[in-house]
Image (cartoon, rainbow over all chains, first blue to last red; front, side, top):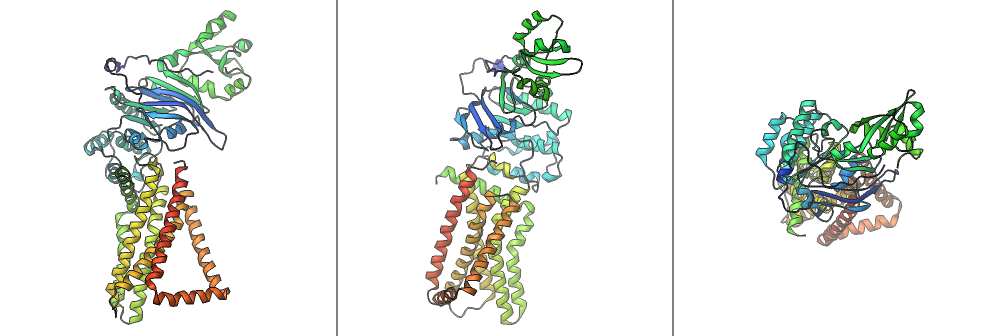
Amino acid sequence: MRVKQMQTPTPNENDHTVHRADEPNRSPALSLSDVSKRYPSGFTLGPVTFDLPLGYIMGLIGPNGAGKSTLIKLIVNMTSLDAGSIAVFGLDSRKDEVAVKQELGIVFDSCFFSNYWTVGMAEESMTAAYPAWNHELFERHLERFGVDGKKKVRDLSRGMQMKLMLAAALSHDAKLLILDEPTSGLDVLARDDLMDILRRYVEDGRHSVLFSTHITGDLEHSADLITYISKGRLYFTGSKDEFDDSFRLVKGGPDQLRIVKPTAVGLRGYSTGFDALVATEDVPALLRSDARLLVEPVSMDDIIRLTNGRAAHAASKGKVAR
Amino acid sequence: MNAVSLVQVKRSMRIDFLRLSATGKSSVWVIVLMPLLFVVMGMLGGDEMTTFGFAGSAVGVCGMFASMLPMIVASNEEMSGNSSMNGIIPATRLNQVLARYAFMIVVDILAALEAMVCLVLLLHFDEPPVTSLIGIGLSVLSAALFVGSLLMPLFYRFPATQAIGWGFGLLGLLCLVGFGLYRFVPQSAFLASKTSSLFTTHMGLILGIVAIVAVLICLCSFLISNRIYANKEL
């Protein structure tokens, strides 16, 4: 499976691009160039290259252990780079670390505030850290999210801790939000609310969001761009529509497997047949070989499932992956 | 160090103070007020020996707390899941380490001052007390700096529980080596008695040397901590 590099993103119907058309050329909010990292355990991430333009929401997707959190840690300079470079608003994330971090609002998958702190102390820490801290805005976010400002962090539920981090990330005039699995622990209503907030956040075309998740449903109505990584490899980066259109789900019986196998990017076999992930451009050729094959549109979950399941792994060993 | 670095150090120190008071601001007051409790007990104690005992305890407690406070910050930070916050705040790693050491030095100086206040309140000095007080203050400061400098890199290198274990192990080892030398190597006992007599005649000089050594150890400790922290995954 090859990497699809992003072209100019295609606007979708929730579009905010009207504001962008006449804007001068500016540096992307985030730009990764051949970023890679190798761990002693053998896990290797990268090389990863993508741009996140201003005014867009990018979903960073992949199964657990794909390298999403590692990539976010690299962006935030919480771990060292082996190769490549990362720029935030044109500034080098290493050399201009402090200036870069002033512009970032960050939410991790677990709460970074001390469990012993009250919500008030968490705010004190943010006040100390960010000169642009806005107390009124923070209070408004807490109220909107229903976070009790008098409680200790450890007494908040996981969902409430997420909301606290989100309220903090939104209250210091950050230009780029980086959210690592922010929806885990949130109920459906809170997730919808979060998506609304993110959409409104990027509306002015001056803010961007990088949003990692393995719950792809979160991205259906909010993400403009998708970056898909799996087992440390960048599989795709580009517009969401392009991502959806790039692959098709091909189904067939056991006797048709040999036709599909050479072109399948991912494969899962059953006793009664198979599901194969095939690049859209390869579908006509397959149908010419066997018109009985069933071709369906593919969901993000199908793509993740078929490029990561045991069957897919076996298939890739069989040199099916290209 | 420029103004930008100073701002970052100040930021990190404020967050460190929040980490210290994470278990309740009252606990900070207990730490500050406990030596004074010894002073009150010493005043009520009666005979001279008891007063001396309480004075010694007050000084000892000041020194102990001064050595421990930065470690409490480090272990609170880790045990409360607050370490990753260091990765997001707009302060370089170098300035975060600088802030932690500055925090330690400030705490140590305050502890030394508190020890001196306790002694002034408890003891009657025959001579003008300035020299003896400065001497004791410097001793507390040097001892606290030495212990803190020894422990700090361990907290950067190991998880808190392991660092505490390593720290106590190292301090225990140092005590054992000292005791062993004194007990079994006759020359070291002779040297100790000479130093002791030198101390009475040249106290200022010896304390000055001790203070300089403590500062040098602190500097080395800072360099080691910075090196460890620069490569650490947060």
